[in-house]
Image (cartoon, rainbow, N blue to C red; front, side, top):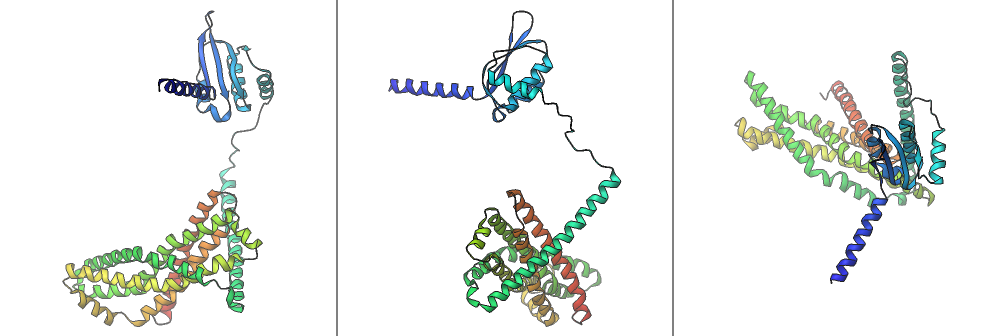
Length: 389
């Protein structure tokens, strides 16, 4: 056992010595003549230098000689640092190999005169250029979005002509991801929003002795606006971002190109099921969200307003008109299509590197939420004009 331990200790010592030779290091020694000897040792590569460059920049005092006999290897970065030491301290070099001598001579002859950073243009030139780029990118993005929408409509037309091309299993899977798995978080969010609406509404209406109208406020606001709107924002952050990340990763790993190579349309296989799933589930999720928000308002009213739970729900049926439900059901598929299109479009635009996936995922969520809020404002004006206000 002792023999094995000695062998293991020797092996560990040899490994440590080998590892020490694989890093860059230096030492300062007295040369016996009132000066100092700078000894460079180890492997001077860009991967091993680390913070050594910063330490060498702080060296002070007279360095009379630089010894490189213990340096086992170096690349152009190591050669540049060694040449900088030679230049700054004006010290002779000893012990350098032929390869080190050639590299140091090569880097010493390169004298860059360019700025590290490009010059900043004047403010009056920079601002219009920046704004112009944004406007140009908006125009390009709008054209690309129309092109993407045209491809989607063509893919749907192809499926209508040949129904066997429709991927039912993919649709069912996306329905599960968009709808079923989001029921819990939507219920929690809607329940709390319903409590907030009822509580804040009751505080304001109490000033006029009209607390009973909290039921009207909670019912109509939840059913007509907040139910489908909050659900759309939640689905955009949850499923819209997932669409962009999934398709973007497939673009990055060239799976989308492989699908085209084997004759499978990415629009039919990836985009159509996701868009249809979002359009089918959004009205149901919006209605579900509105019901849970009303239940949350009834729950608060039971304790804060002394309105019995079932009395609150019965009153809801009397004060909420049927067309409020139809307004939410009409807005649902439109919002679902917007969320899915934003996610799938941004995913299809990924190219280059993994950072692009994160940027496109963020853009998908921002675009979806922005368009949903804009369209909700449009729908509010439209339905008021047609008498469904």
